[in-house]
Length: 194
Image (cartoon, rainbow, N blue to C red):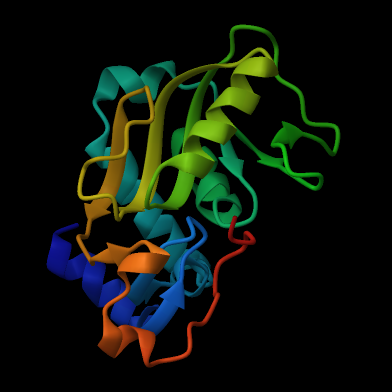
């Protein structure tokens, strides 16, 4: 998929929002990508997953034995990536603030894992998920995402394969421009700001 085709998918799903948003990372933005809306259509979610797998080198794809995503945002795309790669898909969640495998999920020690996200902004959730996967015995060999909002700066410690890289500016709370600050902030993400 080209960048225009990907953005067309976001627009068709009404998943590219404009306003004042407080991101899960705690940063502010005038744009928000609602991947849940993008992925709510199973056919579209499948196309997105196939496009992400095509961005990965064949040797990486062939080594992946499981896909694990952070809840909530990564669950749907993680499941679709598992389908596209022909492997099991699981998720880590943090009901008490720290990611971990629950719900009977487990992986044999040494399992080669793709950690799959919906959106990466700072990489914090991704790094926390990777740590939980490693503590559960997995070996994270790559990470993927629908969108990299970090402008390529997020260091996840493993090769990273986003479908698209978008560079919408984000701001620390003390850096929010006055025109954006004049609009009430909406918190559309799944994690409470720190």
